[in-house]
Image 1: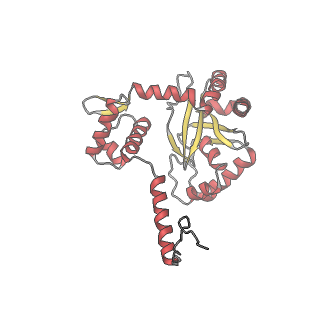
Image 2: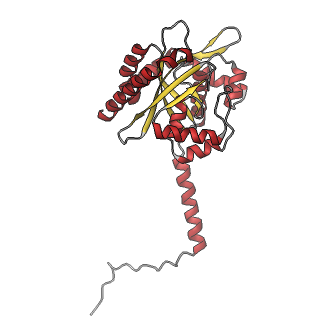
Image 3: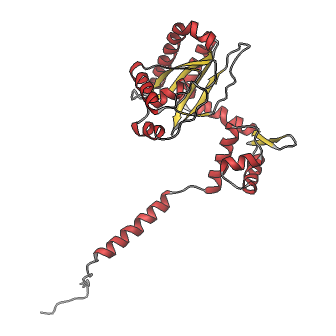
Length: 285
């Protein structure tokens, strides 16, 4: 009997891979995965960071923007020139200070319509603000800072100038303390381990005192500040909750202490109702 071996393949036995070789292969794969996962374009990232810096601190020149952004003056100028060509920023005056331009406004308007929190909360924010005629704002947490995502300014002759998009450290002010109180433990630990800036003599910058204040806020669900950011200005804040009953944002009211304190009970009740209404709108969306 003749055995036909034409269709039979003979595989050569592969020698086993040593442990050092496996370790090297795993290391190379890990490096490749890390490199593939980082899709950040450095120039775009720097330009967007500069755009946000102009939004938060309008009126700065190239030198100041370079110092704050960590770029050279030459690179900062090129980035600003690119943003200027896209009408995201504009130069003003002989000193060439920078502020936002019309296309940045288009982005802001689009964000109000597309960001669920702002879109859903805005009608209730406006109603509440109109009824109390004091400054009202919504802040969210971003790392160790808070960002104002929407606001309404009162029509009183004496009022506080506020700006959407402004950032603030989480340890001072009614909204910031509330967001910090309900933040994950690691966020509080990181912030408390750092030196906390004092805005006024009433700013709570001692870790022990701030820890006690945050505990009280978690227990009561209300945050109050008096002169912590600006002398003579008070604020009250109530949380807005998401669908999982977690704190999504802080709704607050602020104004001169002499106007707010006599109306504290009334304003806190209205603020609580407004925050609860916004919470229902978000959870029902």
